[in-house]
Image (cartoon, rainbow, N blue to C red):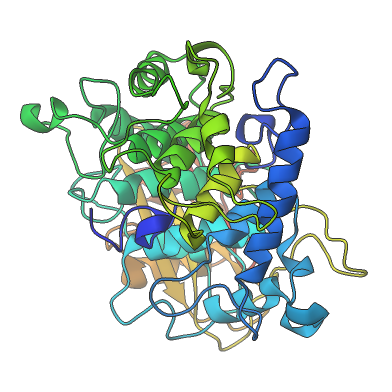
Amino acid sequence: MPRNLISPRLAVTAAVSIGALCLSALPAAATATPAQIATSKTNGVAYLKSLQAADGSYAGAGLSNEWAFSALASAGTAAVDVAPGGDTAKNARSVYRALLSTAGWPSATPVVTDYERATLNAYAAGIDPARVSASRNLVADVYGYWQTAEPGYFGPSANFNGTVFAALALGGAKTQSGAQRIPHSLLNSLITRIRANQHNDGGWNFSKAEGNPTQLAATSDIDMTGAAMAALCVSGVPNTDADITQAKAFLKSKLVPTSGAFNAMFGVNTDSNGWAVSGLNACGINPQTGDFLTSAGKTPVDFLIAQQFNPGGGFKYLPSDTTPSAYASIDGLRAVAGGGFTAAPPTPSTSGAPQWVAQNTFASGTATKLAITVDDGAGSLKVCSVAFTPTGTTTTLGTVLDSATTTATPTGCVSSMAPATGTGTITALNGKANSGSNTWKVSVDGSTFAGATRGKVINAGDTIALRWGA
């Protein structure tokens, strides 16, 4: 597995506010009691707080602990409340936001999972990922990796995990009000690709399997099965869907009866168990009952809690380890706390601290990006990131689309538009004209589609969807 593309234990990234992503309350019949889970969360949070650097940071160059934000949020702790020595000026959220806003972040040669990881963790930290700063829009950064030749994939299709985490990030990081910010056409495209990569045994792996009988017949990975399940569910697939049912059966087949662990590709370990449980959590499947209660009365949550040092709170990676691992502790806590791969930020306890921080206006003269989809109603979906430099605190749809003809990544998102000037109704886009009730309509951040005009006001971080139809 490429260390920069797969799990937090291997240095990438991979609930939301709706119940399907956060099962914080497990039934009394569960083998790990609510009291045990509460203790695990309390001690786990204490350990993750100990990982914070003196400057307030969790993330930095190379292998870092930024996945802690998703675990803290799942456990009910706001990142803004985590500060070294109580120094609120160095709180984890502010420091992370400053890092993401840096021109040199993430590196000179970024990959799509860099932006997906940041989207998931910024969201959990209470930073609107589309409005990190005047220059940073993480949603637009992800859009820039759309594969025009293989629609539905983000980043090189051979690295299938980039597409899984695109679905987790774009589907899981809702707007501040909890709305789905990306259009159904994009969600459906992601769902199609994830389904096409499901192996014959019901699971998934980090690499592409679509169209390759040998790969489809290969044994799946516990970690990526959890992530892919979650990706489907946050994209709107119900847990009764046949593909989710098959994935659940694959995980069940890997259970070790005596411990409740999953026998993963790397053997029994906390990280793989954590990812599998987070996948179940994300799909609203209780990991402590039914298929996941073994004949010996053990569950995957039992196994995770058994890997935790108490009162220290850290989790060990392997059962034989004698010291905790930061990544195992993050994956373990997030799963035990009922989280998927991100979570809506909790209400802060710090006086005066808002639940969300965001750059809501453009900074005139500061280059930025916006995320755009164009759906022609005939099955051709275009996805791109548009770079432009605003001249005021807001802009217009016409200005953004004009920029898209020359500065879109990938190219070809917008090739032409009528009218070419003014503020009136858009009558044609990419050579397709309005016809009767079938017209070009626009939605921003998941709002209801309405007639598209060049003069429509666009604000910083708006996720723009254009659609032709009735």
